[in-house]
Image 1: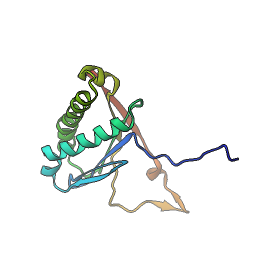
Image 2: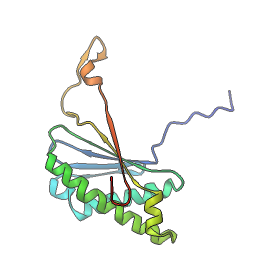
Image 3: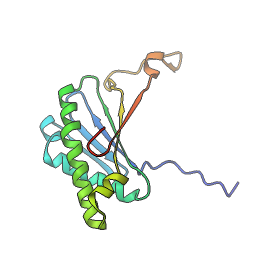
Image 4: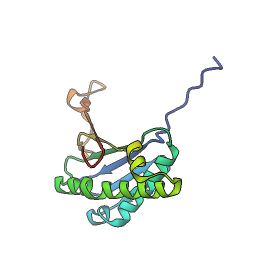
Length: 158
């Protein structure tokens, strides 16, 4: 029927953070991607600035809806690096993005933080470089498992 309009999801409310086995980080949102090739670059102020810019863009495209950050890393990624990234880069970028948007829109920082909490989806680590386990034209049971953990940060508590 003509009255049904099917559209592919454009993921305007999603920012992907991918960390590979050597702790290189890639940020992706509806507008593009940015890649930081070394651990030092990934933890830098420039990296936080790029993520902040993507958060601002995503918040502005989704003024009435929440936005999400999805984090997925390789099984070989350094646990220390991932924890440091989650504790330092992610909150810094989020706080700076809130400050910028609150100044632009004339909304208080606290009000904006209440309406746009940091919603982080954490996907179970994977081995991205390994070949897929396929048998009889189907993905094996082991390869088919998927788990998502969610968390939100509000008033400095999780």
